[in-house]
Length: 222
Image (tube, rainbow, N blue to C red; front, side):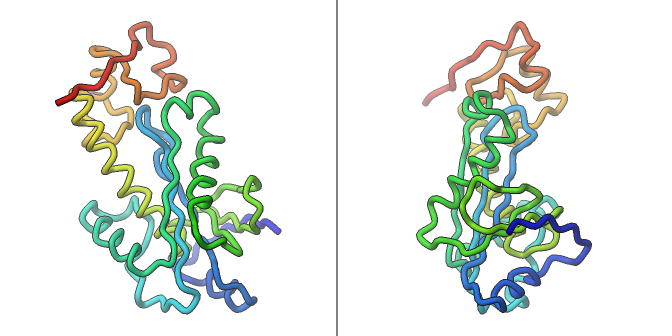
């Protein structure tokens, strides 16, 4: 049974603990980052915490967008140490262009779950109704601000994607990927108009799809 929940409760293990009380042990949190950028992949995080985890241990975990980079990096290491499972799923820019961002987001989540050596008994998902995975799931609006497992998934996904964008910044100098993370900032758009698009740009996203100069350029090496 898949339920859409809207809630204003603070980030907690409330939903996880309710599912554990019902007899389940492996509750997975799923979230994604990178839906909106013009460049780079969409990345999903998947986390399963031990069923007996106490909230006090993870009280600092919240929506990755509300944390500084330093705090996210600290919590990323903490999450990976505490969690039974912490996996990532990636869908590249060319794949996004081929299937669309909605399907790509779900595919990233499916790939993250598929990597898990523990099969989840229930999934807590940020906003999305994930019918594609044959596991019972609960969709929670603003789940990364409510469920600790979803928030943890958002953190590991954000840290991993930001790290990749730093690498892409070195491969494709001039676009400012290290700071804009692929989002369409003024300087990023100016660079696209001046330099053209890279193979990491999403050519089906506006304004790229309307640009005559949106040719692909190769990364610098060495």
